[in-house]
Each structure stands twice: as C-alpha cells, then as structure tokens.
Length: 195
View (cartoon, rainbow, N blue to C red):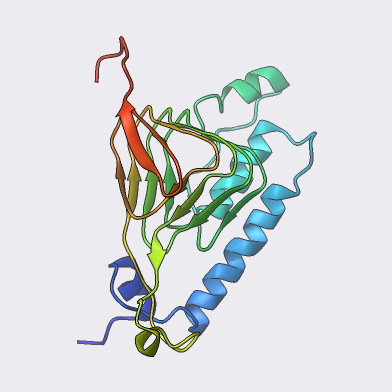
C-alpha cells in the first residue's frame, strides 16, 4: 500500500508538509480563482459571480441554462450564497457554504481542513477562519521545513458571526451568535423557526 500523500494527510488533520509541489500548485490555483472573483467588477451579473465562486471552491455543479430576461436569470441564483469581495482562501476545495448564506467583505479562510458554513448563516466583515495550525515546539515546526496540521471548522445553520471574529478549529452550533477573537459562542438565537 502506498504511503499517503501530503494532501491526504492534510485532509485527515494529520501532520503534513505544505510546501510540496501538489499543495503549492493547489494554493496558486485558488489564489488565481479568488483574484478573478475579487476583481470581477461592480457590473458583473449574479450568474457570473456564482460561476466564479464555484471555480474557487471547485464545485462542478453546472449552472442552469441562461434566461433571456436578466431579472429572471438573476432569480435563478437567489438561494446561492452571497460572498462580498474581497475574499481570501488557501485551497478553496475545503470550503462548503450553505444556501442563502452571506459572507461580508475581507473574509480570510485558512482551509487546511474542511470549513463548513451552514445555510442562512450571516457573517460580518473581516471574519477570519483558521482550520490550520502549527506545532508549538520550534524544533518540530522548523520554519518552512516542518509540518503543519489542522482541524475542521463547522458553523451551523442560521448563525450570526459578528464582524472582526476569528474562528479557530471547532464548531459553532446552529442558531447561535458568536463574536470575539478568538470567537466565543455567546448565546442561542431565539427564533420562531422550527429547528
């Protein structure tokens, strides 16, 4: 049986080396994709933004056929997540955002491991999510030569993440408010919705 690749180790949250050709190329691909999204311009259609977003997160789901009426075509994407540029990610393929979610500008996501954001979750500006981490011992960490590791981040549905929040590894349960640096889950959101 072949030894696991550094990417496979990364995805499992094990110690891995980030500066391999495969992972360096994956980060460059994501950097180019986020650059296209962030620089799409003010007059870009919702269809094009969704297409650019799917390129970042490597979502192969085909777009629906384009409608002649621009308003009707725009309505096809009303349940898609809305991400205000600029956004920054390491890999993109480890980010899953639920329908009807909103991510405000200047979001940074270190997606060493899976980062999920539940449906209808709202995020303020300048939110950072870090699923990656480094060993504390400098002899192990060893600058660019040493390994990294990570742990998944899961944000539930219908959460509110305030502005300037930094989310480290772990969970924010559905229907909760989180704020601070590092983020703290403050309280359950009272609602008339059925969970």
